Amino acid sequence: MADLHEQHLARQAAGGDRDALDQLLRACYAQVYALCRRMSDSDADAADAAQEALIAIARGIHSFNGSSAIRTWIYRVTSNACLDEIRRRRRRPTPADPHALIEPMDLVDGMAQLDDRLELDAALARLSDDHRTAIVLRDVLGLEYDEIATTLGVPIGTVRSRINRARQRLADDLGLHDPGPPAGNSSAPLIVPPTKP
Image (cartoon, rainbow, N blue to C red):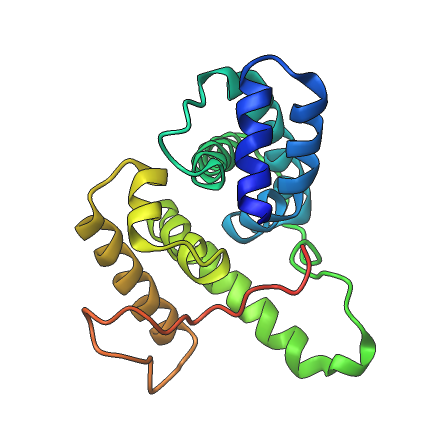
């Protein structure tokens, strides 16, 4: 039901309805930020990328023609904005912030979860942009392979290959001896989606 409502808002926003655009941006913000957070390795870069993505969505909504789901279109715009932010970050020299990956969490979750999260964030940061984007779209946001192919503008075989390679590299990097299903069966995510952005 939410998807139909968002499609309706997107059509209205594409026609110039500012209120519909505002509602659409509010509805998609959590997932936009979650995608940016997993693609980047710091909260600050994720916030910058999410802001740029929202601006790009607002500026480009008139080009949304309804040929794909609005979420797919939003993920494409967000992925591009996040990759642009990552490229900009690489060009500006900044000292490493050892606390950049630490997010607030309930203390009862324990240090083990924090260590796991930091290891996963570090492993994701070591993936290429293409591999990280593909695995985040699949394992964090739960997009289907055809949706990811549309979002990234690449063939579905390329999507499957990037996800398989990303999962294998993460499994190797994290020392997982049983990385899941064999190549070609990419249904078991290595990334547990966050409960909140």
